[in-house]
Length: 210
Ligand SMILES: Nc1ncnc2c1ncn2[C@@H]1O[C@H](COP(=O)(O)OP(=O)(O)OP(=O)(O)O)[C@@H](O)[C@H]1O
Ligand SMILES: [Mg+2]
Image (cartoon, rainbow, N blue to C red; front, top):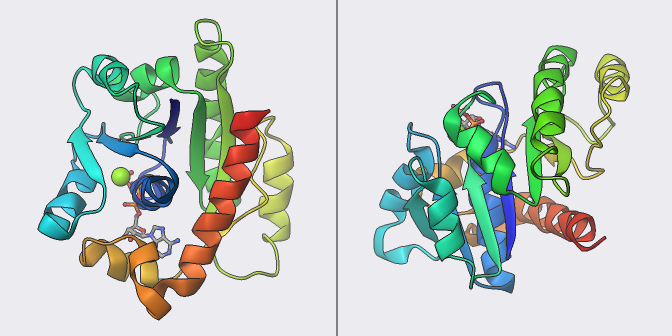
């Protein structure tokens, strides 16, 4: 099983949005579970909206995360949505048990600089979890014409690698959340957002394989 956690130190960066959509995309490929490790419970709320139409199992992972993940080890992918603090016990536990942490960041220098704290925590976690990989993912980018120059400079100062796939700000993400769906289930309304998520999945797979 591959354990993939969405972590960050900034509220609203897109951890829950990416956790839900990546887990939904992984579940098209192989058995997948999503643990909501954030006491705010946003992923669980999304799952409640989906009700009987849910295509993904979402469980409360805010307590006993490591034990629960271990009990799911017969599945292929386990995605963990963390609270907005790297110092929270849930994020710390996720850093201990994950194969890959994804750090969604908005394409602004301020948001990127805030990732320095995550870099420190990832490096600390590697003492006990030496194979831990980490990847920044630009979320809510405004245009395909690359990051702003300043954001690109800020990104270079971090030693964490960044995914080449950036996720654009798209209304489909907000609508899907309100409807208890992933963007993959939005038909033509979510087609471009779904393409980006699938492209990111392909990129993540290369990081997990090598
Ligand atoms: N790519 C996107 N396009 C459009 N809206 C987005 C996108 N990503 C996130 N959002 C919106 O931004 C807001 C914050 O996203 P989300 O809740 O996923 O962040 P979060 O990091 O989980 O926040 P928190 O730290 O509070 O848990 C939500 O309203 C969400 O719908
Ligand atoms: Mg969240």
